[in-house]
Amino acid sequence: MRVNPLFSFKWFSAGLIWFWLGLFVLVPLLMLLTASFLQRGETEFVKFAFTLENYQRIFNPIYLDVFWNSFYLAAMTTLFCLLLGYPFAFLLARVTGKYKHLLLLFVIIPFWTSSLIRTYAMVIILKTNGVMNSFLQWLGLIQEPIQLLYTPAAVVVGLVYSLLPFMVLPLYATIEKLDIRLIEAAKDLGARNVRIFWSIIIPLTMPGIIAGSMLVFLPALGMFYIPDLLGGAKALLIGNLIQNQFLSARDWPFGAAVSIILVLVMSLLLVLYYFSILRNSNNRDKVGL
Amino acid sequence: MSLKRLSKISYMSLIYGFLYFPILILIIYSFNDSKYSFAWKGFTLNWYHQLFDNQELLEVALNSLMVAVVSASVATLIGTLTAVALYRYHFFGKKVLYGLIYILIMSPEIVMGISLLILFIALSMPLGFWTLLLSHITFCIPFVVITVFGRLSGFNKAIIEAAKDLGASEFATFRLVVLPMLMPAVIAGWLLSFTLSMDDVIISFFVTGPNFQLLPLKIYSMVKLGVKPEINALSTIMFIITLIIVIIAQSLLREKK
Image (cartoon, rainbow over all chains, first blue to last red; front, top):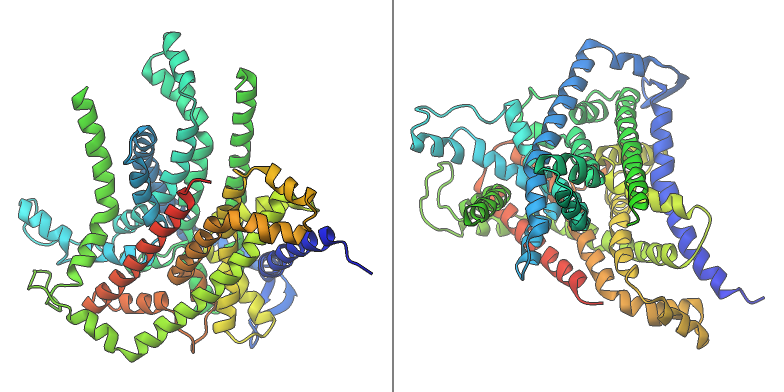
């Protein structure tokens, strides 16, 4: 019997990817979810008995503190990335001429380079006898080297440094597509710049703002090596908590429960993102674009 | 007008400075002839020589290279087929698949790392080369899919129709028509997967065993012990390699279709 070639090639490709993602993404995620409801084992990693204790433990003040601290630092990181990145992306999108691609390339390069190496570069800048202290002393602003490394501020600086390109690129993509005629129309109708910014530019670039914030906020919660290298032992964040539970404390069910919280936060942001795109395309339909 | 322009240019320069200044310092100090002090003590290639004399480090670098080449190749194969299938066919769960690919790019790596760890332990697979390879392939696939899909969406569908009208089978159309036109994006996808695999810390951290080290994990454990000129040299080499690969990949993607 001759196999229909369309059938085989199509189903081979579709089957392969579903098989791969099913086995290495969906099944592991379900196992993670299951593990979060199991008890910690004596000899094995988990004991197959249902419990909600792992989730109850999250409400222990020690862990609530970690959560609060992480969300605060990640939110600060996202805010700084947005404040620095939005004007930058806007200017970049308006650049014309032959250097535009080069300027864009210089944002893309840090996007792909190792953030561990970039974090290490930040350690060199911030350490006690590092570049920043020498510079401040040279300016005469400080007499003695001050403690910059191993502070919460250093963690935020490191996170902003690593994640800024992840904010700029989605912002750039939406600002680039922004229809300049809408701004001109608003001007013709007598709107002032502030009004144009808040009523037109911000709503139309909302998908980029949310996508960028997601790409900054979520990794900021999970990148355990940045707080580890820049914040020292003091900065215990969600990523460090998960890492500890899996590799030192060996309490997998609790580590799994904490990770599930991360997944839930991500899902919430995804829903927000989805609705912002939906609203945006509805608005476009209304004005006939 | 010119003041406005000046302030725009200064703002952009400030951001670029922020992005590149630390890396620049790192590169400069990899050539500094002083082990501990921050002061400039003259140019040296000493740290690079030490790097290439370090047998253990070379072995770890080889491990990284091996994992990166194999996982980039497998991910490119699966990712390209996926992108083509998403573009050309309708099949069950297509929209879900498309969404899943984007979610995978956005999702925090630590979740993928620990869920894969749980899978490998449940299957009693020994942690090491194979578990790293499977994990790296998994996180590279979505990046290949969107890179290749991006180029496909600019395609002229009539060419594919013409091939079919001339009697080419689906596979022949793919191999002789679609793939050659896609080649720049496929190569770019491979190169980007390669850098992702070479640089990954978080996922590798969880799925590797005590007997198989990768370069970023080695750097991580070295950095935890403090700043050393050898790490500056190693980081410089890795940064330069990534830089070259990204430039090649981007120019391939920019090439006119």
